Length: 220
Image 1 (spheres, rainbow, N blue to C red):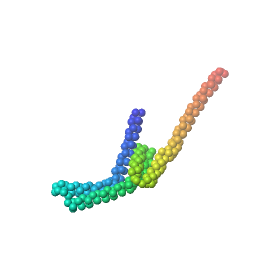
Image 2 (image 1 turned 180 degrees about the horizontal axis):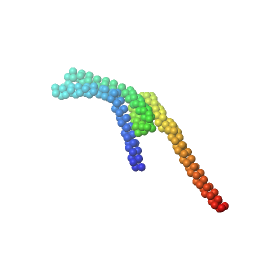
Image 3 (image 1 turned 135 degrees about the vertical axis):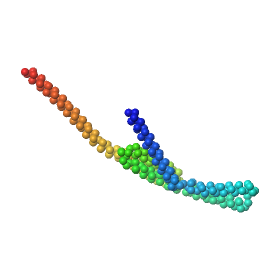
Image 4 (image 1 turned 45 degrees about the vertical axis):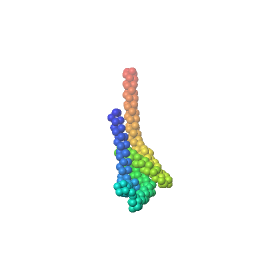
């Protein structure tokens, strides 16, 4: 009994850890191949900031800023503001697209978890948890997007997918498997009843035979 409990606990821990690893893998993969505006424009902004600092360092060494230095600083600041505005304008579409990609991956993983779920229960549970965690991660991204209509559409899709896969995983499979499982049980129960009935009949025959033998001896 203790060994069974320990094995079940280890299975639960492994399934939970597998779910976290699946979520981390999908999240890192999406961020690697679909970079955010923060990453895409940060290097350019950092380079412009360094150029601005170089101008101030030169001013400290050589004296007051010249008209050319002032024009250079103004140009650098204008470019930094333009990059920041561009980064901000691309953030909401990026958050919405990232959410859609994550939810699609979550749907795929949860769909895979339905395959051979009875034979590979631990792996199936881990993939199902990974899909649920990724779905939750994706809905978090859509909340960060600014469009209310897009948020509602993505949340609706995530809710429908969760209900559908949950029904397929827990309701439909439960309705199919126990029917198959009940057949052997019924057969076993019938055999047991037949065996019990046979034992009772045999005992009754023995008692009848003893009673008949006793009556025969009395008549003699």
